[in-house]
Length: 64
Image (cartoon, rainbow, N blue to C red; front, side, top):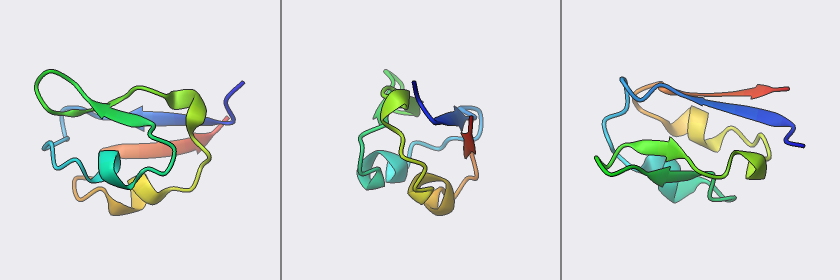
């Protein structure tokens, strides 16, 4: 079972792909509109790289 929950506010996402490129565990992908989406939530290791680098503050990682 995953230790972390990855919350993504798509309304704030501007499709920069920073989270997709920086995530070491490939938690993020892109939907058909190009916005980020959580595709491998169980892979999250809680490193917070995505949350800290998101320029739109649309990602939050919580410990379960």
